[in-house]
Length: 215
Figure 1 (cartoon, rainbow, N blue to C red):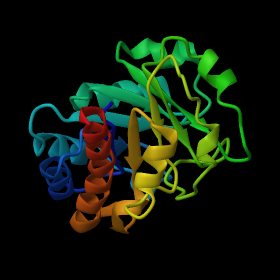
Figure 2: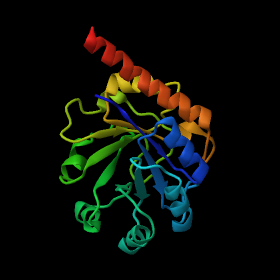
Figure 3: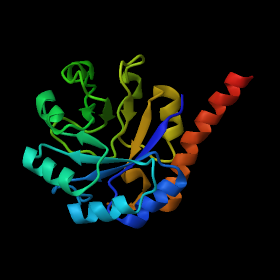
Figure 4: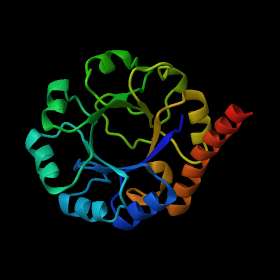
């Protein structure tokens, strides 16, 4: 199975263009005012227009109002929604878009209960922050707590960077990995060399798996 890569917290069109050129499968745009990576609809449109086809654009919200979510959807071509807060399934499903739900894993949390409460989620992001905290904390959680046979895609996040992502992929075997601060030179400013290294490390694990299967 190929592990996908999502680069999250983009604030500049040039970084989005670099991420896509380097092989990122998806990008994340943060619509949360308290985040140093938060952007408005105008900036999001500029980033979206810099992307080639077949790169998934994800819009991130944390306890936003329905009006705020709809405002973003009216102004930006978004493929996927990502909810980081206390949003229930009814709210997440009310926008006629596929969505993924973030599961806070700090403190050894069991993801099963929250996953069961969102039966129509397209997947789940397991992140190292605690309940009520926003993502991008840079904290790693225990990868052994990732479900081994999930019924929907699992995205691994939380403290990932080029130096540890290969180990994370080998152990947790996620559908995708999600990185923000681990490929930055400053909050919201991506470092192209670190993005390239991160994606290369993920692809290296995949190459080993393919070669093993052929042998």
